Image 1 (cartoon, helix red, strand yellow):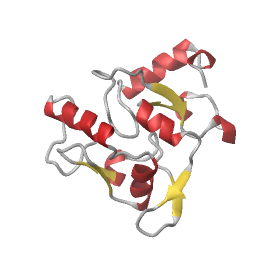
Image 2 (cartoon, one colour):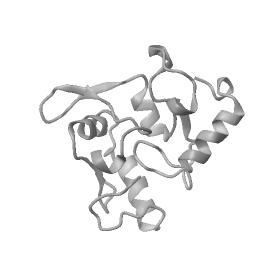
Image 3 (cartoon, rainbow, N blue to C red):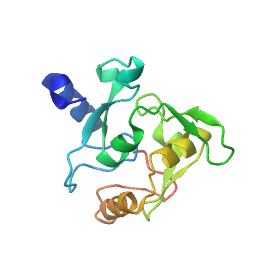
Image 4 (cartoon, rainbow, N blue to C red):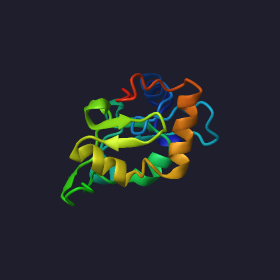
Length: 147
């Protein structure tokens, strides 16, 4: 969906609510060359509405991999589970962010989402670890970040 099909007040509301951070992997827009996307959590192709409750800021890495995916297999047992919902689910319940930029899934939802969106591809880990090193992303005790 092009930005022009999401009206400016709605785009501004998503940016403000999400504070310039990808709602899936936690990467910040600051320092990134590519502009983050505002995309549907429940895809339009599956009748997802264009509303604040169904839109999330996504880095291009997560956005392009998510596409219209709503479920993915848990890499531990291969059973398909729903993807993480960035507005309804608590990030720290499903993921842990390590100081080296690696995101580990804590639950079937977390593991399936991390695998489907390829959170730990080299580029994504490098970008997150740089933001952690610069103090832009605080990981606290190295046991989990509330992205």
